[in-house]
Length: 189
Image (cartoon, rainbow, N blue to C red; front, side, top):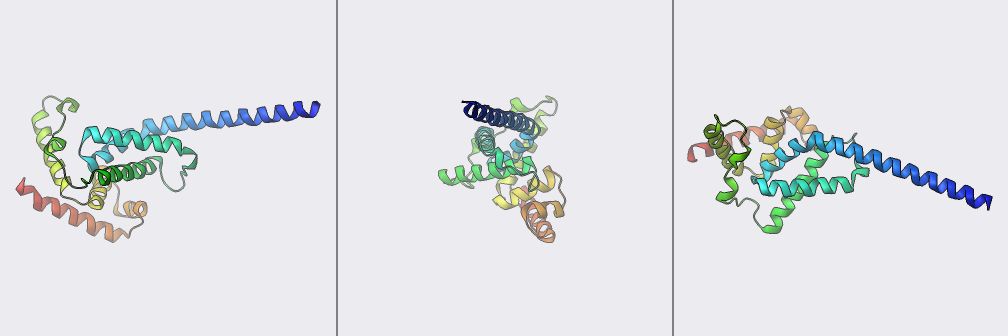
């Protein structure tokens, strides 16, 4: 009986350690979630150009990240980068499923003005946002990702190249072409 009691205590101890690990992981995930949510949301929005779709994609991406959090390796990528990758895959998968990769409806291009914090700038902000959405809509998925990393996350070509496993000069060329493509499209809007 003493042996069984010892085993039971060991099993309980191991079980308690697992519970401690799970609680620690849950707290870490919650902190990462709070720190990265806005960036992930903004990134996904550059892909979907729809607040409703963005919210669904971001929710699904964080749910997938929570389920596989034990496999997250901070030495390979930051948490935000990891979740953005998951979110990008979710967004593209949803678009492929619907067969609407580059087909944006007018309602998806309309900006929800209730999200604008400053009433004085509402008109200009609405016009700028609408223009930015249309211009991002002319880019390919890769170009949109590069523009996001370069201008929203303010990464250097070298940092983008490291994150996407590309050559820095290739990144510079592709970003320049994407910007030129948007400039060319701008007069038509």
